[in-house]
Picture 1 (tube, rainbow, N blue to C red):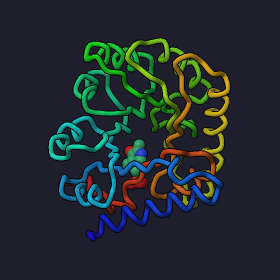
Picture 2 (cartoon, protein in one colour):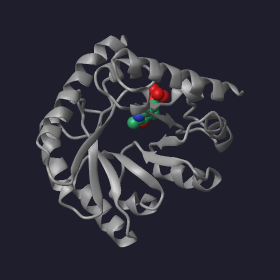
Picture 3 (spheres, rainbow, N blue to C red):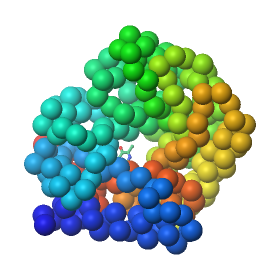
Length: 231
Ligand SMILES: *Cc1c(COP(=O)(O)O)cnc(C)c1O
């Protein structure tokens, strides 16, 4: 087994153990292998070990790798510009980064034209950080509702990138806030909003995220190693 394959299995095991620890069925926590900046050969090693959902934060990277990796499910997890939506509606299963009505309208328009329905998560900037995309927590419900009324879009939950902290335990407070938002919106049973996925937790903090309610984690570095952005 390749190093990347072993890493994937190791992370998968940690995800399952974290799920079991808090009384969840390990199958109910979805692991997304974040393959941004990585080449097809590296990604194939993870796929051979069982990775079947890949996360990318750039449209161009999905376009570049798509044909070489048949049979996997792609999730767009990074900021999406409206002018790029048209390139991915037929390629991705889920967009985790819906953060404006304008983007929702463009996704709706393109998906309706293509005859598909896109699963989306509303991205929340839970730490209210200047540098991060995502809506403010108090705006999340309104965007869920607006998006839910558009054809071609299915609101499936919330996503966040928690603030970077030295000790992963310090991210717990943010994950807890996200879970509260998630549960509150879910309890309202709005039409065409299915609050099923809470996407949070990365290499540094995915176990804490699972303990606080995440059922989708996005892990890159722990599987593929450090990224080299200068390549
Ligand atoms: C890069 C990225 C990840 C994965 O980060 P790691 O720390 O490498 O696990 C998860 N989510 C988003 C949105 C990312 O851009």
